[in-house]
Length: 521
Ligand code: HEM
Image (cartoon, rainbow, N blue to C red):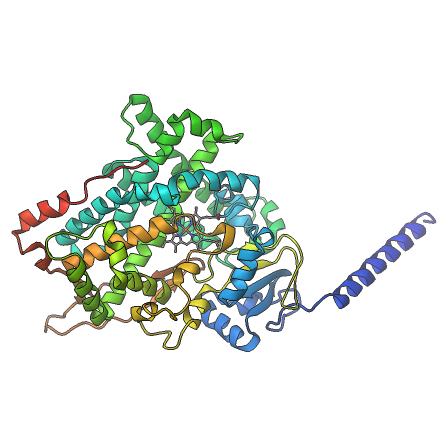
């Protein structure tokens, strides 16, 4: 008993000193950024409704300004509402702001932290980024023009046959481009793997949405045995892990088999596996894992995002036919009626370029980008940002802040030199972790949009009485990606004028024989 008192007294003194030190440090450091009042323990956890998060963020921005501080179960979160603050912190102070939050559910339990997008900033991330650069550098992407043009003409053929199925056809076209570039897959094998990629995307995007899994805020829950009633997340995570592993490894094994049989098509993966110089330059303990995950990541990150932009394009053209007419007039003028557009036309089609920017702005695909985490304490504009803070760039507010009449669909806003912030500067992220697939994505979007507008008129469906069925834009946000919700009252009708109204069979032949000069790596 006697020996207990000195230990107890020492502990008491230690705790008191720690408490006093913390109080002293807190009092002497700059204040946290402003934000809504926090409740005891839970903080603002229940102020972040998943479905209505954007209006809540807008309200906070109006009340607290450029940079807003909230907490969820003790985890600090900072929301950056302007391009200036996002660029200053995520871009210029990139060393401190390029980490990702620790996603216990998606990252650790499902195993998605092996992918570049969720991986923490550091040596392994740099290896992934370096390898990805081989496939997506400005030089490399020029070699994909042929495959992009070919897939665009195949899309047109698909649309002629089944115009109402446009959403699936867009996804297929984008999936085929990426799988041809990354794995050199032929169309049949590509279509097989696209289905896996879709499921994995949806699952991961859902899993990393803010506030979806309690285990992300209370990581000790991961130690709950799998059989306990509250640990159903374990089964979900195990199923996710199996699916992710299959998606990463199956196409890679497919290419290896093709190489062994001597008939692999040129692709990123076959290039890395067969070029001894490239392989020798890669300093990685687990080369196979590195290759499987860089290739799989390009595939997974590129399909849903790019095809969503195209779906938004159809929605916008349905609602704003006058903008469609201006874009088609430009195509008539520049490309003319005797051929389909190609990648070289891009620089001569400023209205199409402005149209793509407006689509990216009007429906921001990732309204809060992909979250970051601070490594060390920081001070910005007199506010203290603690180490370990989750940082969310509010891209949504950047897009709608940038000009008056922000909710209108107006590609023209990007045709004047004093126009608003360029959406390419915020839609694809910031600084060191900016999307490496941006150029590939914008090229695919360009060729698909220009080709579709050359051959089709997009309009509202009509009912049995011939009256137009109204279309109301509606979006669903799963926390990372903002989807255009199922809408189908759009009609893609061939206009034929660009092909001098040939017979249907001849037209199919013409379309499918365009753009066949495909070369990959
Ligand atoms: C319209 C299409 C696309 C959009 C809107 C988009 C958007 C984004 C965003 C917002 C990020 C997070 C950046 C950050 O943290 O600052 C990102 C990361 C990433 N994107 Fe994209 N992306 C698109 C297409 C693609 C394509 C086609 C590929 C590859 C072929 C790709 C590969 C990646 C990868 C690998 C990352 C992770 C980068 C890292 O964490 O270092 N994306 N993308």
